[in-house]
Length: 131
Image 1: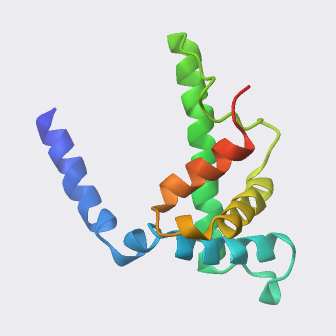
Image 2 (image 1 turned 120 degrees about the vertical axis):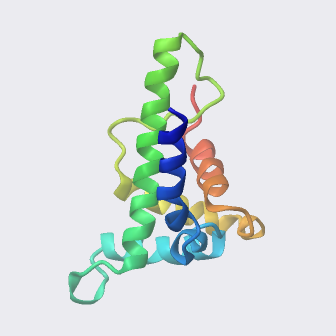
């Protein structure tokens, strides 16, 4: 078991230390990427092709969205209340969440120094707080 964990850590080390992984950690970059993603979703991209930045933002938001759904499934199984969490309706898509994130980032420029994972939690909690 310890050997498997060590192998997994060694396998992920190059990915986690890569420049592309580190860059996602900044709110300024997240805003820039998500503006490109929003433009793509609106049909305002050259040749109709999504840039790496647009895909990066959409993937980040979709990963967060799926994580919220997975956590609710775990809460349900454990019988834990989710009243302080984030409740994104299952009908809300990533295409709909990107503008929510962009708007929140633009309205909170003092927070852009925060890591992107903190910013998306703050934005989505404000927009989709559990009842």
